[in-house]
Length: 465
Image (cartoon, rainbow, N blue to C red; front, side, top):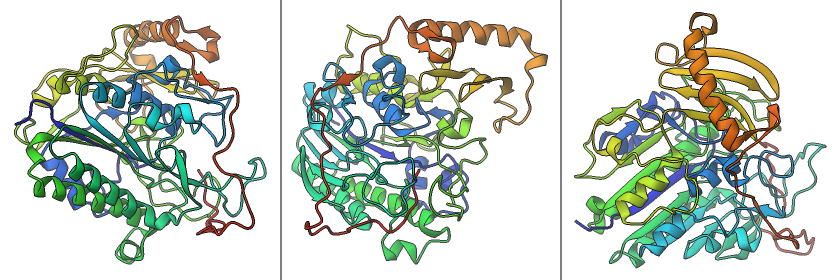
């Protein structure tokens, strides 16, 4: 067994807590992912640091809450848009940089969404190579744009910082991503590698191959979930074929919760088919359904098969946990919010988190400690409610009047977060935050050219969200 295991980190886009069979789904067929959970550990209280993509992904890459790294708000918007002058600064030491410095070959594939300007792109943050979309797949030329949204430039497909295609056929991208993942693993079979596969699915608009669409019992959404499952099966098969399975940590998660079984925010009036069951809320909210997501880790021979854990863990924890396992020192000159949870991976240790803080942009909207979750606000409006997640995971019964001692303790924990991370709603500026990266000459990566032979001139689905 290698002293430095390979790492395959699969991060989905808007995949919900209830979208996989191993988390209770009866709509989608996910044999590969169900098998992955059966061969490793499934975390049932696994959280992203934000209910939307850019801050969530920045937190994954740095091990920090989004406000800590200036990723709470992007010129007043919750996510990054094409051509913005802000992004993940070179001063942040990413997970990929940390592993690269420890001798790992590194490859990012898929959605990045931490800034599209050159200095913010994956190849400037520790990845040797990158293939993918620099932001969401609904940020291209697309039918039915809402009135408030300016026309987007053509959607760019980027390889190592260069735009190689505009308006690509989205139904073909997962195949292309998988093919590059296999090449990378084969090219680096003799050395430790870090593969970050950030799927386009199940973010709208959803374009899928006919082979998945015809087999789905849950429309295009189910077909996209099953495309993710297929992609996972191919990667696992390749690890077996190369004799690398026992030397590889495979991690599967999502950047935030799903939009649920609702129509997209803009576009089709038909329900999407997503699920965060049995949780309340959706993507974009700090209810459990917005931030509690699938979290599966497999490492044969090191992580006992068939285990589950309801201890609080987060995507931010991957940073220090992988550092400890892979022999990469965690930066000592800055605050890191993630914790080494290898004790949970390998045994029955308790969560190292006294509290988990739910931020919407730069507002602290809720805090969880143990089984208790206290809400403070929603989208700027006060909402003080307490839930016992141990007995009421769906956040249906407010018990704030029954547990004043719990409320006092959670308020004290929240005050610590407001002091160091800030809380815009109460006018607090954090004492331990770092600035977002900014450039002075930002330009979109593409511009519309009516004479260009685009593969898809305009995506015909109007779904956005």
